[in-house]
Length: 263
Image 1 (spheres, rainbow, N blue to C red):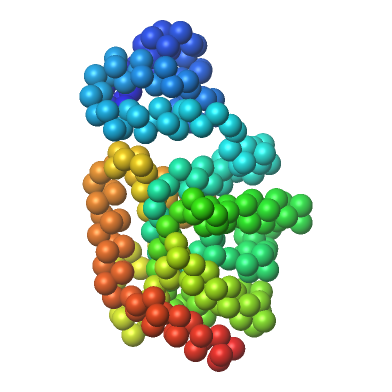
Image 2 (image 1 turned 180 degrees about the vertical axis):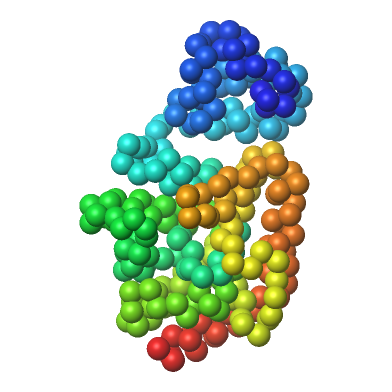
């Protein structure tokens, strides 16, 4: 909102009565901002979208530190940002070509994934990442569980991270999760052929208003977060295409069972 209005960080700092460094910390999510200051900033940025402003105010009114803050200083910032993004999303849609979605991974599967990174992680770092991943999965539980659509390619289902028994248990877990009312798992079989964005891991997190939609893509250096409308539109089109060629939820469950039975 500040950059769209052409407002400098120095001007924003003076407007809000804080130092220049505080603006950087607020915008990077390290420091909180009060609802009153959100409204002041919105007014002086000439932002007239009431829904957008109220969504930002609600985020500023949460009144508690997110659970991911316990990992600050122990895990990379990008991992904390993913957890916070998932926490605030009202609907999530994701596509995976080579991996089981993190929100659907068993502990054994996740452990196998964390043990094949470069450079190799010491065991205490693996344990931290595993604990963080397990806590992330809480967004799929409870009365306020977030709706989640996972589009998974057959290749990901056939990868045997951790070996045959771990892979079989992982597929059973995906099947169990897919029976939840808020979780849909759609499989793209090899026979479906080509589709845009093949090979990418993409999460599209819808915010309470469209301006807060965010795409997160994985890379070897960590997660990237995209929010420009042209980027969002492109990934919505990618995911729409993948959903069209994927099997239905019921057919996907049958497909996963067949793969599990073959192991």
